[in-house]
Image 1 (cartoon, protein in one colour):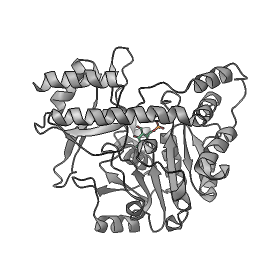
Image 2: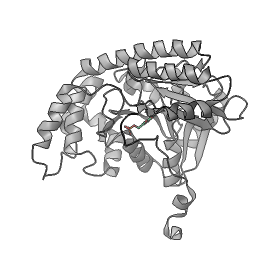
Image 3: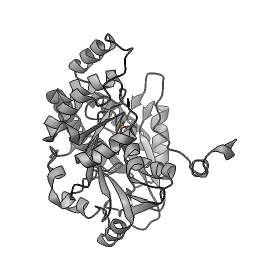
Image 4: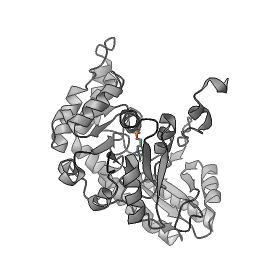
Length: 360
Ligand SMILES: Cc1ncc(COP(=O)(O)O)c(C=O)c1O
């Protein structure tokens, strides 16, 4: 039966999402969800929407949401495109901007889904290799700027949490294409922006910023994201998206969430404080902690026993993410490490106590 699939689909492995155990009792620090609940106003909005007319289609333009997001980022609503999670926006971008032979680039190691999306579209992939400090060389950047139609950059990066400056990002703006800043973790950085980059003439109106409600807004279970870009680009992307890509409940939830900034900011502050404490404790336990600005941290252990640590934590029902990136690192021998989502103080203490036992 596989022969009826497109050859590109038969050949690709597909994306493997992080484990989502369906039974309770796990400390889940593997997929960068927020350990705190969403704002109570979100829950009220969901209840209200669910008791409304669910027999009719939702607003295809998510008008109320777009107005709220536009106000927050200092743009007009036609700069905002809503989506069923950031991943859908990344799909829409690939479909809107890339023909089968157009090259797509991304830093490596980073978010593996970019590669999957390129494979689905049949686009050649260019990896911008990062060194042990998660930086690229200017020569590599110049080469890829010339060849790529779309360049995806998570900022902060996953799994490292690295943040690149606007000047560095500019090095990756394709000469004849667009730069996509995937800001899934953008609310956790030291100085979150409010859309200034969109108006920076150096980016020439060819910047697309993607944002999600899965992380800072505690709504991974709802599926909502959006992107910000010049209206000419948004119009094109709008032609590609499903008419009703966001359901009424998700639109109501996201609108309430974006309108309660204090709730999101308070949770974000708590997570960052926990991150500092966890980083110190892990350093004391002998881990190398990568400096980063997200709701997770990337660590390596001098023993190289990452798989063992991951498995022993899993036996204790603590899930973190073991990640391996072949052909990466300064010497290209490959990189392996552990990505740990920042949970509550209590969850993180259970993790640290377990690690003390494992490493004893
Ligand atoms: C870098 C990055 N981009 C996008 C996403 C997907 O976000 P969403 O849940 O909105 O699809 C993730 C999820 O982990 C991510 O790490």
